[in-house]
Amino acid sequence: MKTVVLGVGNPILSDDGVGIHVVNQLKQHINNPNITIDEALTGGMNLLDLLLGYDKAIIIDAIKTTDDGEEGEVKRIPLGDFSTMHSCNPHDVSLTEAIQMAKKLGETRIPKEIIIIGIMMKKLPCEFGEKLSEKVAAAVPKAVEIALNEIKKDMNN
Image (cartoon, rainbow, N blue to C red):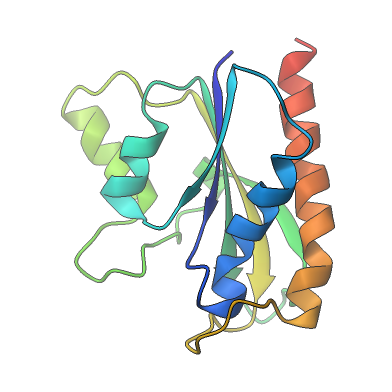
């Protein structure tokens, strides 16, 4: 099974870059030619392009939480349960919309399973900085653990 793990975000927008911090730690634990671990500084259609040809995709990103979510909480979310994911670019579409459009156009290389590992935030950062806030930095090991469990689950099948 070919799997891609993408850390999404902007590494110079503090907590928005948390997905990149997670995949950088994951690279220290995974050495398997069937698993690609990479950074994605994009969303929507461009993000979909990075997923094509894989059986499974794991996307790690900062997620704006609703009022009942806790800052720094980490959640595993199947894409089908996650309709609000949207690119920061107002001229782009959400990943869900990009997948629906690609399917209508006959694209067959879309991963059969797409999982989001979301690190919850009350508001997405707008200020520059390369360091994560305390709560978000504390969530990185948990996100790494969830991603490793997701990868190991497929390796054991």
